[in-house]
Each structure stands twice: as structure tokens, then as C-alpha cells.
Image (cartoon, rainbow, N blue to C red; front, side, top):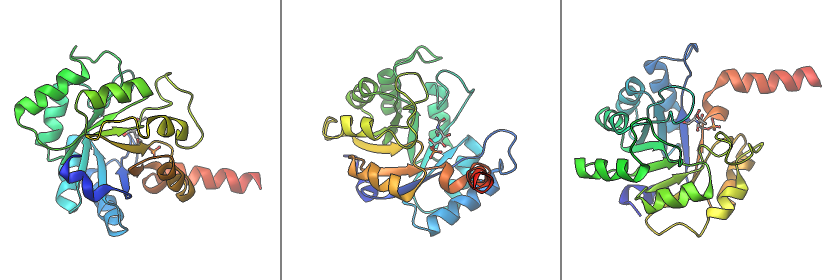
Length: 228
Ligand SMILES: CC(=O)N[C@H](C=O)[C@@H](O)[C@H](O)[C@H](O)COP(=O)(O)O
């Protein structure tokens, strides 16, 4: 296991992202939200976009997982080697990128991308945002340090479960090489679901929307109130 990851076992990681056009889409806001979740005990923060990564890294002492979303279809989470290099240059401690088996815009495979980054001298952990068992196993084989369930339910490989994809976690638990850890990410909306993800085999759990996206959380409550 990568040494930086030892401290993350059994912890909560919080994803702090605002989407294009939203009121909170401002690196200063995301830095403040990141500092707030770090105060609450988040062991690491996941940030999107080069400006946010710079601002968040300056605002928190915990490791920053950096991604760069470019586009909204196909491979869009840190889709190319150049995106990866830019995320690292922006100050991410951990690099996350698409870890599916879909063709990448620059024509490189996931394995080639990881190899090029190691060739560059990047020594931090690399997180693969995966969508299926085969993708996860291939990404771990290619040298990913963290296997995330981030894209399960978003690519057509698996049905979109209501909460986290506990079945996928269960299928992967115990099947990854010792070099990689399994992280639950995606639709963890309640503390009970976070605990269930751990019980299903997750090394750590990432929560985004349910902690840092007030518009969505407001919608949940609005619907509950209106339906009562
Ligand atoms: C599919 C995709 O694009 N996921 C993104 C990856 O960074 C984010 O939009 C999610 O908020 C993040 O994965 C955390 O998940 P949740 O917000 O469900 O707790």
C-alpha cells in the first residue's frame, strides 16, 4: 500500500465540488467548504479543477485528491495524460482519473497513462475512478493505488443503485492486489450507507453531494416535506 494511504484506513473523505453555473462555483467557496469539512474530521478532500485544487490545497492540511472534469460525456474525469500532469502541477497530493476501460481522448490506455506519470517522477497515490469489476482489476494491475467505485452506475456497465454499489464493493473486496485499496465513492447519502460501504469491504468512504451540495440536499428535504 502507498504510505500516504495508511492514515486513510477507516476514514471519511469528502468531495467538495460545485458544478458549472452554480452559485458555489468559486475556488474561494470550495476552499472554505474544504476547511469546514476538514474541521469536521474529513481525512482528505477531493477537489475538481485546477483553480479549486490550488485554493483547496492552500486551505487544508489534509491530502487533496485532485481531478479535472473536462466535458460531461464519455471519459471526462481527468481524461488525458496532459490533464493528469496539470492536476499534479496544481498541487494535488493524490491524482484521480477515469479508470474505466473506455477509449481515452488521447488514445493512451489507463496503464500507459500511469506509466508515463511514474516516468515523470510523480510518486503520489493514483486513484482510478472505476465502473465495474474488470475495470477495477485492470486498473489495479496497471498500478493504481486506489480503486474507487466512483463511476459505477454512470457508464452503462452496471445499474445505478439507489445508494452506493455495495454489490460491487463486495465483489472487489479481497480481490485486489495488496498494492491497491478499495474506496467507496458515489451515492453515499447517509451515515448508515457509509457504514454499510465499510462493512462491504471499503477501506475508506468518499461522500460528496450529501455533505457539500446544498442544492441537492435541499431538494431531498423539499420533496419529503411536500410529500408528507
Ligand atoms: C459520476 C461523477 O461524475 N462523479 C463525480 C466525481 O468526482 C462527482 O460528481 C461526485 O459528486 C463524487 O463522485 C462523489 O459522489 P456523490 O456526490 O454521489 O457522493
